Length: 489
Image (tube, rainbow, N blue to C red):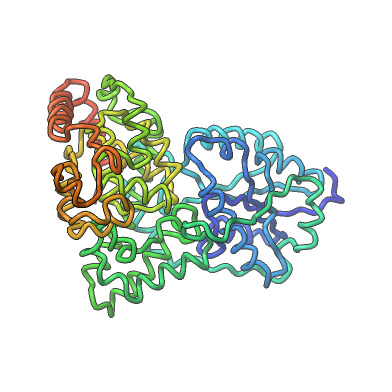
């Protein structure tokens, strides 16, 4: 061993882009050695079909914010474009490294394989890789026998403070001196992009404004596509990329509840924080959900792929105004409230009768808050391929009338319809020839005819899926899933 090399500790940041309530950082600092925080833009993820530039920009903004928070400690992140094994190999030429800290990642298949390779690399180089629990998700569980108890214990711990000792973090000058070893990506992002900006500072602004006033409308606005944009917390991207931890958000909401005007709204919000951990835990225990139906009986379900249908859905040209408004809004802003997400998935998988895997690829790239542990279980649930959840086929017209009665959201995102009277904005295919002349509007030219009959396609999907639920394999799998994932009190 070369004793001339300084012995340092590494923290490998992934989807935990924060300093506060970050167990990996806290445990690394306990080593009392100087600590280097590392983030890597990995080729395998830069090229992965689930990611898009909106994600990388959010991450860059998060890293920039992290650097501003590290500046008072005369430190910054080592941010490089390289695979993690290459990064550690290069750092080993300059430092003695025996301990690396990170969170356990419930990610996609490529990150799972990456982690297995990294574990072998660490073992071969006599490095101990310490992985900490993330948001209460437990690795290696066979069922939910003890999960609730362990998850509750995790949530009850007070959020962890970031308190490095003086000079414990590797300095800015030293980190910049390492740049000759690596490709250093630019962290600049477009100023005028219509997405929520990344970073803990911005995440706290959203959280604080929600808990200060916006939460009172949470339950009444949660299903409405326009009002939900302010009535919901809008912190999902900050949780997905780890600017905020579930635990610290839960604690803030819990303390507010003692004096809150609308305790019921806060209860509903905190309940959804718990459900977030539940769904990520489900994906942790059923990793094949990324590509295959969790209920193996549904894997025999084959659907004919229509490129025309899929393009119309992706671009918001289906002829159903609420579906089109949702898809256009999502494509431009990266956000939809939960009910509208369910609706567009239902329309794709039931009315267009397309495989959920094809929706997955597009939606993961569009959702700014793409979180694998939420994304894949929710897609399969809305597609009706779990065998354990109620089959829900959303009627886009009924939802339009109920949740956007004045067509405010529709007219905002489908401006072709903004001059029509509200009933026609909901159902433009009902407009008569005379009324088309009156409004200077041509159905099929200004806005497309409906690409499917929603009543016929709903019946086909309902009959097919309900019949399949009677299949022996589907029933056996449903029983297996319930036994494995039913929460224990």
